[in-house]
Length: 347
Ligand code: AFP
Image (tube, rainbow, N blue to C red; front, top):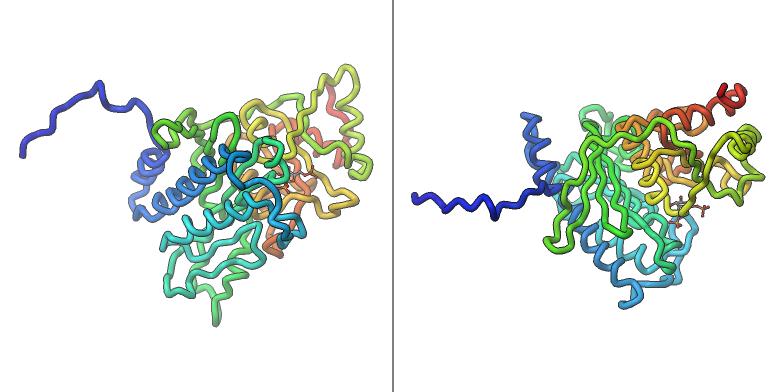
């Protein structure tokens, strides 16, 4: 067969997310390609969603549907669109057995259609959706687990119970941030990698591999309007950060993906403690805290609920909430010191 002409000058000098996932997969001899096909479902859904978010205000995607979700929160039109897109694009992959969405009450059992997929995918389709109407960044968060071996189950497998695995069992997690650029960040337990959507070619292109979060950065991110009902040690921490020689600054978007992304890139700490309004904390363990904790630890950071490592928490309910302190290792340790009664760190 005639060899195709070689034009190295026309070959792209970039790595797409698909190439990256496949290259990683080649390192595992047992890999079947199912996993990269599954992740491609997420990349397709988020690319479509990014294009809808970009048109917000031009097409009819702003505003509320008039319904409330399982969390009792107002469902925005884009929330619903994001949920449907993720359900469709990921559910189409036969390797997926169970889907769970922050917007839907129970886990969706796809094995009922006769498939025997091994993956469980959990997602928050549009995090920070109350910010949509005012053009502030939002995001999609995902977490991937493997179904327990059916032989471990006595009697009938219980899909709803299968999903309730601690974050340590995640095989992949990541998020997409819809902002000045559309950014895809993921880990499979081998570092944190960042891609940016190139709108000209429609592909997520690698911009940085093995991201490391700075160990220390004097920036905290919290909804300070709630602080009077924070636990006393957390209030003491916030008072300490305000001392003139503490040199802290504060940044809060109110979209967890955006706040976390800034901390991943520049360091700092995000805290959402228990409050009078949300005594268990506000963020969802399985949809928000676990995937971000996996990413944070892979980037050298930490994530705790005040006393326990987030990734070790055994969920009791799909939509369980948790207190969360996440970010640069030393910044989380300082808050932990206050919670343990040790007070401010020695200068
Ligand atoms: P929405 O998706 O309802 O906007 O909630 C966003 C969120 O779960 C998370 O992204 C934010 O960090 C957090 O809530 C903000 O909560 P407050 O509005 O109470 O600060």
